[in-house]
Amino acid sequence: MISNQRFEGQMVHPMKWGKRYPAIGWINILLELTKFKVSLFAALSTLTGFVLSHQQLSGEIILPVMGIFFLACGSCALNQYQERREDSLMERTKHRPIPSGKIRSDTALKISLCFILMGSLFLFCGDNLMVVGLGLFAILWYNGVYTCLKRHSAFAAIPGALIGSIPPIVGGVSGGGHLLDPQILAIAFFFFIWQVPHFWLLLLSFGKDYEKAGFPSLTRIFTSAQLGRMIFMWILATAGTCMMIPLFGIGKSPAIHGGLFVAAFWLVWKGSRLLTARKQDFPFRSAFDAVNSYVALVMVLLILGAFFN
Image 1 (cartoon, one colour):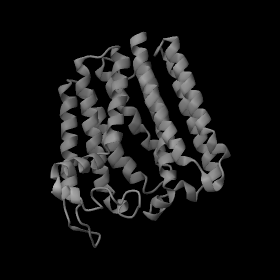
Image 2 (image 1 turned 180 degrees about the vertical axis):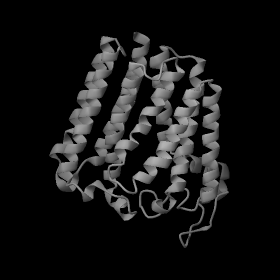
Image 3 (image 1 turned 90 degrees about the vertical axis):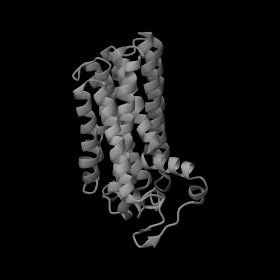
């Protein structure tokens, strides 16, 4: 139930819409708790892997896509349970469901476990135990390794990036491919590389917040100019990795190749602002939006390319 319990010694009252419209209140709480947009992105990358492997849409796509979506929802909710105290210290996260008192922490934990169970059942029904294992490994890596590691290292995003490569592998294997197929590994490697600038740009957009919560921060190790150059190199690597994907027989249409080239050029152009920005006006947030928009565009192009092969 929506709670007005004390959290960290402070009384937090439930929001008015939660009292007047409890169903709407719960929907909003679930969307926040499960990081709906992040979970949806994971599902879309699974869809991308499936279509590239299967070369068509079919009813079989439902189980892996829904399985990864629910697993991602459960993993994100579990992460918010794990970091509830840190979230209460940061401006960006203090209004999340648990630290704001909209939901009890034990209730959030139960919800996260229910989503993980649902996701596992969807993958299990796909009759591929390797896919189930991959999905559960993603939970273990994100909630067991990355969540703990980022409390001790500012470079946790690099091993943590492995999480982003798993959904497209699940999609590819579910679509009939083999775990070690070059095409599947090429897509997985692209998503792995993308995750590093994605994570770092998000952290740097709220660097002071993370320092206040006790997380190690890159801003304490490097200057803004150094960080800009480092992240720009990862952005270059993201664009370059994507441009290598057609070498593995993915997206044979010249139009798709042209679209990937234009998208990569646009990303590098947007990322180049990190090299020339003034110290007091560093564009970490705009670069973060550009990197995410680029990956979304690449997924659309690759899916379209599968139907033009």
